[in-house]
Length: 226
Length: 226
Image (cartoon, rainbow over all chains, first blue to last red; front, top):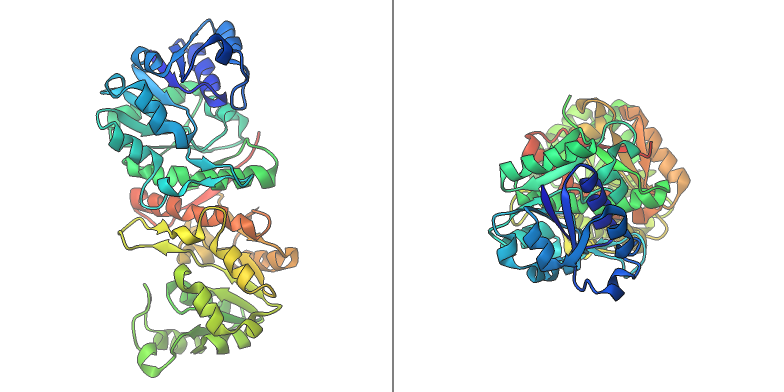
């Protein structure tokens, strides 16, 4: 499948590499894919020039990555997601599955981060993306775990779940299939895209579990009525 | 142990009944323990006159319940907790373990509720209670599950966890022992009281799991690095 990755940090590179290993055709899009930018260290990740060399894949503009993709991953920092997706182009996202992996986190007061107020309460980043790009099929997924765990769930022991929310059942099924390709077996369907209020709320929990447990390789399992 | 329950809704009644069954001496405190108020239906619970008759226990003022208790449970609605605890009296809480079960939820826009902004971000209700009552030993616990599950964890299948946060290790150990009395076996120590930012953030998750799964008998299990 042709996949456009909006964002080239650690999450985008990790997801991109794993998707390429599964046979997908991935283009990473960043704001400014100049030689100088490609040579810079990214957010918790190596320079994109190294990623491109290793995978034989391409780094392009947001709009080029969105044009390339049949499925789009939003792996930008949450506060910048709406701007990045706008730069990717509303027409380039229309009708496509848009997997929203981003979290609107504020790191300004150190660890653990907290959710940015304008994306919390009776709203969420995913809902605001869906509202801004009504023709896209937004699926919130992969946002509740470390990048390494997204593509290798066995890094966490025992049963644990991937949380998925979105309005389009077929789009959620496609994302579930991609996740199965990474090895995921446990899924929690949080319903329509408003379910992202729940999965985005997991971030402060995950960050605290990382701090207190000493490892970002941690996730949650939903236990239901006996 | 002598226990003062600040609040007489469903959570207070359920915890109170279970603590009495374990041999504790429980007084429930409410704002106005008049005959007329005791006869009213409470928040998702029966009239307190019926609870008192069934348990042989007493319903009194916030201050009387706090004076009675060696351990205090805050089971008020989160937005009203600071006012209720102030009415209970700072001197009556000093030096005592204060188990904060409350969540600052806004139900004004229907289900699921969301966290009230002034208690979220880089703060939490439990931290604000600890700051307002610095001599109390605040332990955030029991706030992430339905009242029925608090006192009977076997209502949820398989392994699942009780999340605990607080500054005083001995106070957390005491709350853990009380929880073991109810049948809890899985505990997640979120560290100091700021860990309540995480356990309070679970509420939107829990409410969504209730909505989508059809039962409030749902909880989370933490899965750690393999």
